[in-house]
Image (cartoon, rainbow, N blue to C red; front, side):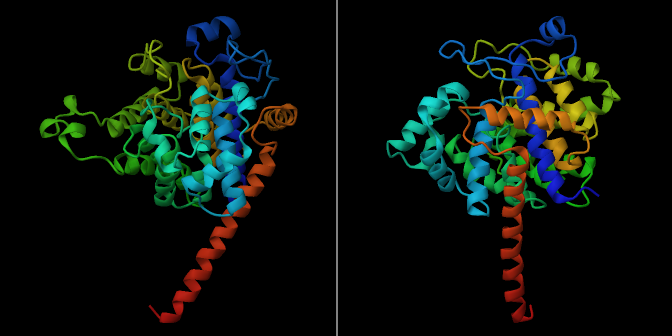
Amino acid sequence: MVNLYDKIKGCIAGSWAGSAMGAVVEGLSSEKIKEKYGILDKFQPYSHYIEYTSWLRPEGTTEDGIERQKLIATAIIEKKDRISCLDLAEIWKRDLDPEKMIYKQEPYDRSLYFLLKSGMPAVELGRLSFFQNVVTMARSSHPLGLINAGDPQSAADDTFEVGKLYLPENAFGLRWAALYNAAVASACRPDANLLSVVETALEFSEYRAEKSPLYKGINNVEKFSYDKIKTELTRALEFAEKSRGDPEYLKQKFKEVYYGGEYITYGLATAAEIVSKAFAVFYLHKGNTKDAVITSVNFGRDTDCLAACSGGLCGALTGIDFIPHQWIEKLNDAVKQDPYTNSKRTIEETADGIYNAFCSRYKKISDYINLMKNYNL
């Protein structure tokens, strides 16, 4: 059995590996990736935000999604418990430097920071989002699943709470993130397996779903429904089942569903596309983190978000068994060299902090249960 610490470390390492490797080819088609790299299976130096920065990132450097993840991790580590959007907002105010943000975070992140610093309430920020189906939370909030290890319900609830900084509470992007983090929490159970994680995701695919005709369509006719979360997740898992372990089959099936969108801001980064693909890759590779990351990186489109999601989910289930030690070394080396990151913690230091926070939360719960036992309930 994989112990909890290794699951936490595996989730963090898997998400970082996916981020760093996938960032090299973000936005490229699978054909372009194949033409340039054959199969991309190692870290490479790369540049982002070339329109206004000139930083060549060393191999193993993660990108904007992991910067968000690090802020959430910091809030959890320091509080030693579950967090609210107010807790995270305080970390933003203290740790974010707008001059450094231009190198590693989206302009949208910087705008939210300035709004928060201007005095706007943290709980109101997400209501200003133009991007209600973006994968921002799902690909960045792994620590919310980890601090709630074994407790999918609380992981989903915390996603909606903390996600108020990024999205409106009824946004599809938050619902995708909630089911993803519920699955991460489920993967951290001692008896977790591939099917139990997938079943948790399906269970939470309708969590906090609106029931009105606006979302469900007239007389619940699927064709006219705006809410297709469970349908898309189910279809993705069916693709994975039919692929019989063949990543190329899976890639081609998804190409029939998700294509175009370059003319829309974050059109390649919808939560619907990224999270459903991530579960399919997770299922295809049976939780093998290395294989899941490499497959995701070579899928094309939003490769870093996809690989961070699939890699993190695999790591939460199987720990560090399927993550090359050389990958972890490269990722840690890149952090030490990074002048613009929100946190210099290594993978191990991050895992230590989240694990200790979980132990603190566990003790509080245990103390409460022991106290209430005095009533002989």
